[in-house]
Image 1 (spheres, rainbow, N blue to C red):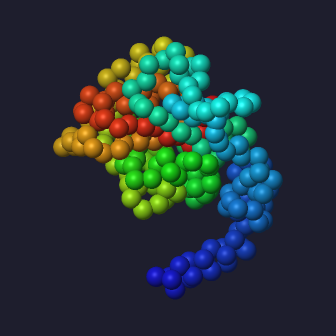
Image 2 (spheres, rainbow, N blue to C red):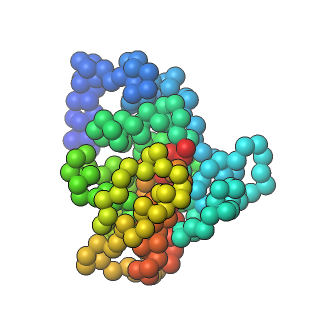
Length: 246
């Protein structure tokens, strides 16, 4: 196994010499730094979310706070989940990583996603030992894209958290909703009513710790709709995690 890993590393090094990776944010050749698809300069611009932050959506608080609490948005909106975390603010290089994965078939950035998750304060401990449940795409959308980015992110988060953390595809999307990008919170909530259901043949063990996984936390409407479906099926201990918040 070690020999195979060494050969893979040598092969990657040789490939990098012939085709050096370029930064997905600025386009510069990546030389050194801790990430493979962000140059050292852009990697340093990633804003990892650290305490204090909202304990429901993960939004960081400006200035000092005695402890984690709920941000004004979450304080005013009932949630079907108990707690949440996010890796980075969705700006600059963080946004470029998400867009590369989501819109440009850039599955190669997942190694950087895992590395960032691994070094986001408190995140590996939040994930460890949980069953990570990807937010599902409608089958039509998944056929068009070729993959579900939330499923891939769940795998990266499981790698970051370590042994005992697994991916569990428990949900399916039963309504092909339009894009939510330009919609306000109320319209998103209306669109997503009854959009998710448990996969056929799946049963929820109330003792399991489940964490929903999505790429971005915007209004929380999609995660809340998924959480409602899991609660209805008997889930007791339920959190959420996203890569970006914005």
